[in-house]
Length: 534
Image: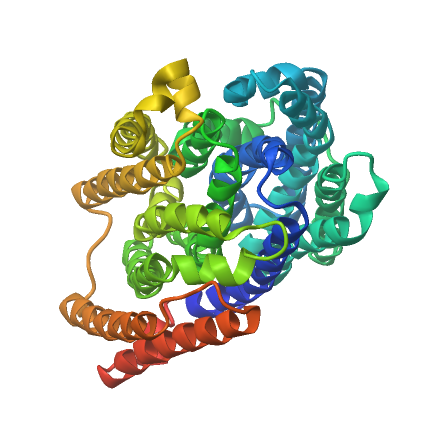
């Protein structure tokens, strides 16, 4: 069976992800317009982030990176019946383990909430609401993890569109909940929690027909002692840190943000959501499509093909991540004001979210490049190297959180803020959440540097010709784009006008900057065939 090029696979995944991310932005607009940035929305985002964090850590992060190489090896060397049996055993074992985890999470939701929202201990109503919402959202982990496994199977067979589009269901459910279901609940924001759970079930169901068409759908089986299950678990344990450091950092940030001024969790969540738009569309897409390709080259001992695929991933990531970073840093305020500043969401909320978005966006190239470099190790079933890099980055993030938080507090606090102690003072100074975004961005570069150093040390990657020209082309295109954006911001400094004026100005800036960037790339010699990959 012929395989599509890496570019075609990436575009297939990115196309579905674009629809999902676009609806994600609509979701943010609807939710913020309906509920604003309040104690209730803070409670919801914490209750959603806990199972969502575990989903990204265990399912999309650790499990997928361990499962895909083992699945690819079975697919390339085994029979169809062996492949079907492996999938049944892995899904049955994963589902049984997650069922126990979910039961414990629901049973001990007050304790879990207290652990991750320690800063809300003096707000019992907010803490209780978070716990109640967590009981509803925690079972989402079971269904979305099985969804991630189903998506990994489809991705291995180059069926990228359906797994990419599946998250659209969650966005549609949350939009419907905010607009129409919320008035029917005593606590309106509870509707969002139920929307999360329902969407998890539906996302799993929509992928099963495609797996059936591949002839791989069968009843799950318990297979804890099966060799392929043991191998997946053995690879999975160390990758918990290696592939999901960003998620651990974000959850740690959420915990610290509970000590800060009301709205901090919401502002950070919105910054993360807007960063996920380019990162999910292209960074995650690149990592998703390149992992099966690298695994195949490794299984077939095709070292040259392995290196070329990785080279393609690095070049393509830089072409997308660098302009995305610059665009988000420069247009953070216009983006937040245009997309979210409606209804209950105030101009001050927009300013606070824009500050953290600018800071977090500085790490976008590193976040994206790690998505490409980490599969180079996972595909070779080397889990130790990403673990070391991940742990170092995680520890650095914790230290940098404290450093930047202390620095900004000293710069921005008023003497009267300290009258009731340090913890109370932290909850009075606006803008401290920016320290958490700055720390996450900087720590991501340490993760990237350690992976890159190991890659060069092991000699598994050889640069293809043309990198000097690539850097010059990239620099010229980004300089031209920045010049256009700064000129536009000079002409349009005010982003508190009418909604339609904001939309028009933002569209002109994004369109003008994007067209300038693309035009300079083409004028300096970039052609579509250069991006096809292998």
